[in-house]
Length: 304
Image (cartoon, rainbow, N blue to C red):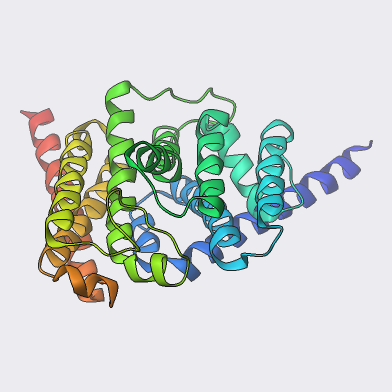
């Protein structure tokens, strides 16, 4: 292959990579305004990688929640297989999988995170009500490992090409898992009506047909508050841009928890609790302000 031919191949590959990245970005911004807002606090590399993680998660979720065809399990298995294959080759004809594989190979995301995620997605096709054990297993695979994927992205954001991924500490992994768990449980409460009425699923152990009483809501809110405290305890150990983004996320969780606590249990089946856009923007602005103040104090301390 001549130098000219090699340059042409590399240009084509860069174009394909960039197109895959834009596809993931489109998926994220089409499905989640809050998640998209949070990613804007990250540097470009981490933002693109988080978009890739989100897009794959959303793609699998759409197979079980939107498609719902008789061959949904086969479609999900095929997506799982495509993803694992792309981890090895660095390439996929599925643009979302391609973008995810590039991120995963650079950040150390592997089967330890991917396999439990797809196992939980498969559970959505067969499990209609959870006991405590299956609930915890589902939350782990559907959300906690996604938190770990995001953590790996944060820790590798400033790595040069070719450098090995950073292995997260157990302390940071615990916080990342807690962040994912809080996100999932909040959405379980917000989506009670849809999950039960449209999808026929009951996630919370001890509830029947999606009906939840005030005591059960209080128990779930207590779990989430514990998860949020665990995640918040790891903030000082995150890279600055990631710390700002996670702090903003936790701030939104705080406000959602307050809104959920103020909503009668019977109303949770009828309407989805949401945060107005000005509230979201205020939370983000506060997180940015806190991080800027931290940086200024750090510089002053360094010159003392």
